[in-house]
Length: 280
Image (cartoon, rainbow, N blue to C red; front, side):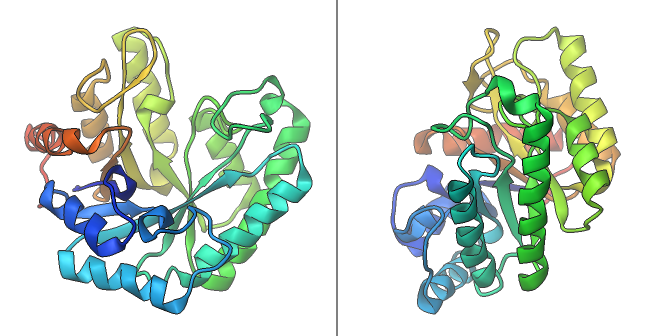
């Protein structure tokens, strides 16, 4: 597996500065965010020069851009807000090839009108699922147009809040463009070690054919998110489960501060070498 990090972990508004920090911390790849180019994460416009500068910085630093963050609330209660997200998604997708990447990560959304990462009781309604199918169909049309894949991430606060729902979405839409970003810390809050292991291994087995990227953060004993290696997540089990399905993609850490980056890189490298094997 290749070790990577969210590029926006580091300060900077130009890709050369940010990706240099990524490489210095020991990572070989990154999930990029247009904020690292001094733009909104979902810009109204990206110039050809701005897109080229990302690829040039990646080549110069040796940091592969494995994905671009393209998260917006796909089931926002206001239709015009969803449509604005689709438009901005097309802007990102149009420039992915120039930025040397072919994957955009999405947020399947929530009915909460303010925070796209906040749980809402209507997320499990038939209407929310209907709206997600419609939004994903639009996103797939954009992905087909620009030859990119779309990474969705099962997480408790969103409409796709389990591996089972992610599998349902894949099966109903029947598009090879839909891929999975696996983050085990988004699949549980407070569970016993045995329950945690069962949830993670079952999710990986169920979605094995679509997993293209893995995330690395953690959970505290009381259910809060934590930096990878500083919580209760069984990383040995997680990484062995990924290896068991033949996963050899990128393991991308996030939810940490810049000054924690080197320590997390050392932690993940040690875990990978402990019977799993790391690609360096």
